[in-house]
Length: 345
Image 1 (cartoon, one colour):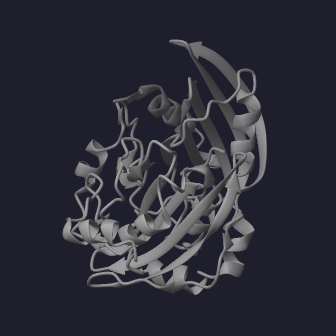
Image 2 (cartoon, helix red, strand yellow):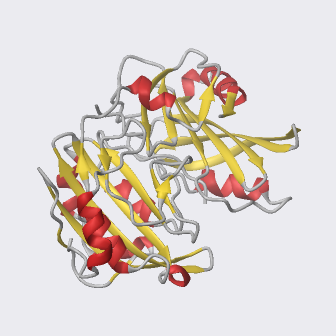
């Protein structure tokens, strides 16, 4: 399922965890962007000891890292690590104030609605210079069942949400003890600059079209706005989010329109979404589908104009979503310019 990004400023940031948990594979979450300034030791000693001796590995320009389990390597598509078996570790960074909001609702009952079934209550998680909690459980998605760990941690530089997913069929290659050992090594460092974070994205934006970068998330998504506010809880400024897919599951030919409409309809921050126009084209062998729509801001009720451009290219896609107050609909054409200028690195 395609999605975009959650809003932390002005709304509870639990949406971050809720939407990331809902995905069987790491995907981007839906909503307005975070615009604010974002365990147990394994008894399996053969794996635990090297993890403790090694230094944490940080995704490019990230402030949260860990020592990944053996065989896991840094992902080129998102902030985290992946394994040939399909196992993954997704690291999401949030502002320091997000920790209290997340922990307040970090319970099996609160997360069950996302499809995550916890195998017991959350337990404390030791973090050097900070604190954390972890839930262990399972989740079914895309026809597979995953063992899953979700940890919320806080350190000097902010809050981190770490999601570990291991296909049940791959647990022999990625044993629980290896995951637990990795979670025991979570560490924080000073974050990279916004310029460093943008340079580390798996794509480049050639035309900002009058928008300015505000933040990246998960080493994958870029948020742009047009206005003086970095924090815009009422959706008063035009906004663009660039978000390539994280998984490698192709959308079947001929189903691109249905996929795009479902992605837009499930965008939780907009109510009463009505698609007003659909345009389909083929460029360099890829299907490019654009939807125009109207709706209203889920919080303020402000009328919105929306554009969504998705480029379907083999087993991946790139989604660009533009939102603007209805009286600033000229921003939609500029959002489309942004979409046309994105090139994967």
